[in-house]
Length: 224
Image (cartoon, rainbow, N blue to C red; front, top):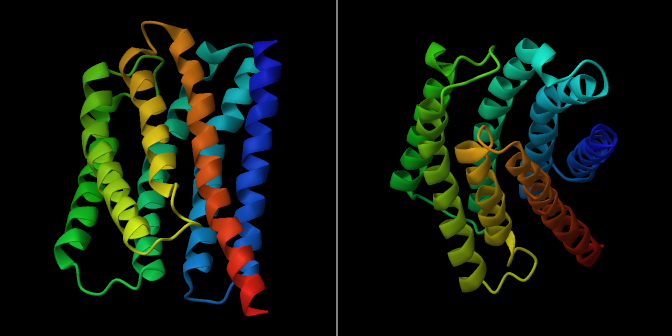
């Protein structure tokens, strides 16, 4: 039953995110915030598919323990694409609120992203095994969490200052995604049931994508 429910959920998630992303890319002008948002959604869905597809195959066949290599490779790729996702979200913030300058903030975003990706590339992560070291799981997620915190603060402040109702909950979707993700990093190996928190974490990302899509439809409708 778990295999069926999780597989159906993952398929539903990937279809929604990729479909919305492609529609945003096709329905927006080049160089706009919504074209960038659509690209961000496609990066999210494409990256997650490298992990979720082999996971679904594993659950529906011989089990997770027999898919260590494809699952590990998928986690590795997803870790990198999620970092790219937040870099793109940062540039959505800049375009939406017409931010100029802020070189220190941009430098922080790139520095945290670079450290995160370098840590993800280290062989000590043992991605292709069934047991990756907890210490490295924590280490590579420290810059990622700091990057997320920075994006949370930026969207919270800007949405409030600009009375941006369309994006007023963007910061909360990121808070929720990290709130559900961190316990999985820390304790999923001890208690596998904690891994179920990835479902609401995924829902938070769907919310993030839908905020952008709904904003595009609303603003495009006003222009027409």
